[in-house]
Length: 202
Image (cartoon, rainbow, N blue to C red; front, side, top):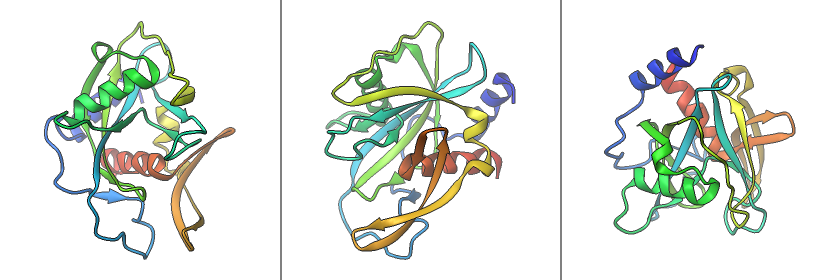
């Protein structure tokens, strides 16, 4: 798809930036029979930064640092927990600047899609933002080991959405994975990308 066609599709199918879902619509447990316990979820937000200039459209993803207490060494969108009194869009933009150096003024938020409940107890709201030309990536080594880009068309191709499983807390858990070369996109990030695919194309 052309950049203009992708942008038109996103604007048509995404939810408005402002507002939030009262509860997660999707989650790490969608493919498994064991329900999450009743618990208070911590609000978080991530940005799916989309580059629509200088080549094929692509999402920016990060490899989280190995020493982090949660989701260490996993591939993720930039983002994290919302501060008290902070809106979810502001949290996504703030975390993106802190993690990879892209300032809020360089991002045009165009919408949000299905919120996600993680096995680690977060209620994550993902936003899509168009990254304006001229940005510079400056990863925070305390949080991010690597920043890379992956083609939008490849991530939105259902043929690249694999079902894998592994043992977690004594149970075999199924999850989506999108192996991309030597990078292994899986778990919540792959699940959110799958949810975005379904929002756009199903």
